[in-house]
Picture 1 (cartoon, each protein chain N blue to C red):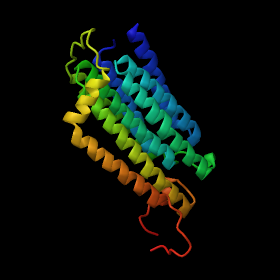
Picture 2: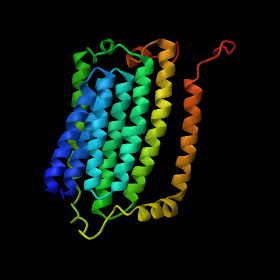
Picture 3: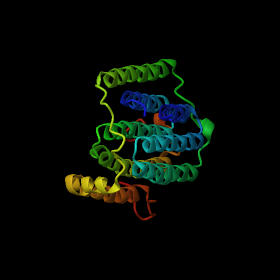
Picture 4: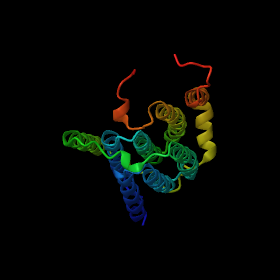
Length: 170
Length: 100
């Protein structure tokens, strides 16, 4: 049963990921990316952490994708302006590089000895345990991420700001 | 539960699809989405290791990856918006020069 659910969610994630990279219209890609994120959240639930699954939905499928859709809407692009690289050599190169990377990653994954899996009575979804790990063992990374987010807010505001008339570009 | 290898192979496949998307697309927005796809692929393997090794560190890393992804998207989209204001396009082939 668990295996069947895994295969359904994995197939959904892979199919929608392929749609993300193969559509020309950015809005279509964005909606398929939401589907991918949701399927991945399902996998997180199956792996035993409802907390991370909820974060995945809220942060990725919610906040980040809304940001993407807002920017797509703001830019108001014509979808047929793009298309993929017309040079056949480049497209073949991209596909070949992807396949080589996939083979390398799968070979590496296959070499990793499979652990027996956690015992059924042991949970990894305990939010208390996650927060103890986060606020004791990884306190400094957590603080640094806070500073990073602050820097990102300021950076985004500075870069997206419309230059006023009197302020000449350098 | 599916064996650990299944999750790792799924993660590898999603990552490779993301790389392919970055190399293949010319639309800066779709390239960004492919980068998000790669970050998510890594999250899957972190979560799988966390679950199979009964170690919460993987989930803390996912938390940090999500924060970095959010920061990256905010700054990246701001860059795309300002490129669009300057050049009226988000095609990466048209913005291949550093200075013009």
